Amino acid sequence: MALDAVVEDILATSKSKVAEINAETEQEVARILSEARERAAEIKSRKEAEAKHDIEALVRREMSSANLELKRAELNVHKEVLEQVRIKFLDAVTNLPKDKNEALIKKLLEPYDLKDMKVYSSKRDQAFVSSLVPNYGGTLDIIGGVVVESKDGSVRFDHSYETLARDIFNAKVKEVSKLLFG
Image 1 (cartoon, rainbow, N blue to C red):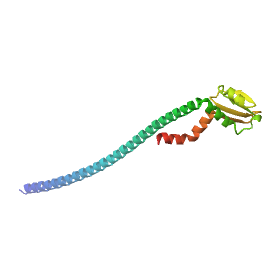
Image 2: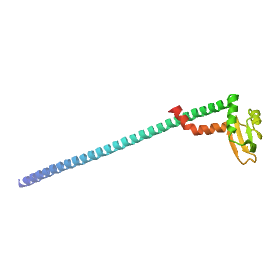
Image 3: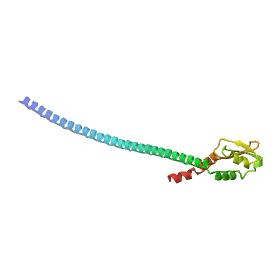
Image 4: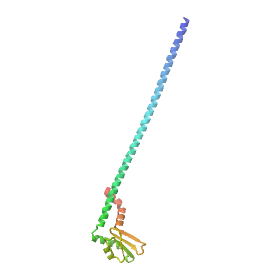
């Protein structure tokens, strides 16, 4: 019977060791699972934050792009309107009544000593301008106004309506734009 007691003692010790090992294993498994869950939660949280940041950045880029596109479209509309204003201005200058056109031409010629200058005009104004100046240079392809040139051609003053309109328009484009678009 002593052998049975030894076997039982060994079995009891073995069962105790197995139970102890199982308990340690369960604790280790629980610890590993807990750490894995914590890491998974950290990774999930980090990825969610990254995704949120990426979404916010994408929204900002899209908004910026949309605003830029809107500004471009608005600028194009402004350019078109300004071009229409410029064309209407040129049309109005082209169609000045005869008396106003002649008065304007006289005003344009006032600052010059015309005996030392050649004066060019549009075909429409040829008769009038040639009657005013001693040295009529001929006609140019302009809608109106005059071009005054030194006899040797070294100095030229372009007072054609196109040039005057362009200069006035360029000088006043900000004011015109402000009036039209606020």
